[in-house]
Length: 450
Image (cartoon, rainbow, N blue to C red):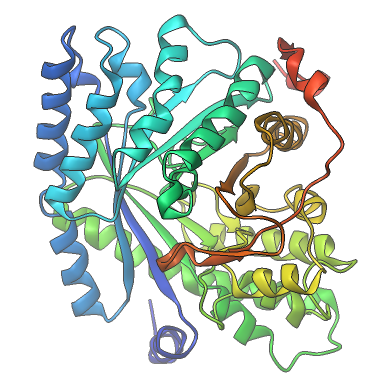
């Protein structure tokens, strides 16, 4: 039961603290679209997406209007395209079909131009990955991901080497748009199958024909809950965050079930992720600073983030039997006003962000780098982050944008939810010989748990 006090509290969160449903994401299986002809298969993909998602945006808008709950994005995720296209090739046609379908139904993004090569890549998968920069440059709404590592398989360093090139080439082909192609591409370790957040969303092979997943966000709500508690012990801070996460998740569950009922599509999961926006009162960094840090990035930041991430998960799990996705705290730079400020002040470096990814939900996210950064340095950055995911049995990811024509100290403006970011520096000593080795970094000993 939800009493009047809870309703009023939730309304205050929405009106004053930037609480929103960040996304309703419809996952759609494309396995029944397979054909040995690329044109036929791409047409089937377009037809199925438009048929299943025809009412997604209207339903989201109706729920937003009736319940008074902001729903920022409506999105689609599909079966990884590399799995359904290997028998026919013509990979970019699938990206074009996805983009056309997404525009037809009116969603904000569509994810799933994806591949899984954590152990090795087939010849066809290699060819597919080579088309990612072209696919991202030639579409507006398509997002792409590649999983190059798992705790069970280790790290495919041949794939990691290629990822640096893909990232840089995606930026180069969209240079007139500040390299935005790279912002739609993410490299994963231990990718999850029910993630509703872009750019890493795809409809996993263990999912059904169609499903509704909801992503909830509320950094501003958590910060507001901690205000006025200066000097209080961490036990109390954790309890406050858990209670707040419980309320946020309950709202997400309500919206998810309502969308599921109206669309006649099974409800999947609620992803409770504190995903920030460039708005001043919607920042994960500001939550950490509310705990007592002068500026995010100073010593103590990783401990504060660990507490936050754990408390968010505990509170969310109590509120729903179907919490999934990534669920926790995101630390993107360009999308978080507090992170941007910390970088500008010199408190937050690439190395500190890497340390923070050991305890947060994802990894190095929306970090702007100089356009002339070598692709092998990008590959080495990816390798480090994949190692954190593999050794700690968690999902980690890298979404960096090497902005063409920009150097350290410049600022790039992406716009919208992607925000803006100062160009960050990196370690200039060369990892080229390390990356060139290729092969596979073996799985850690604790992966053998059978």
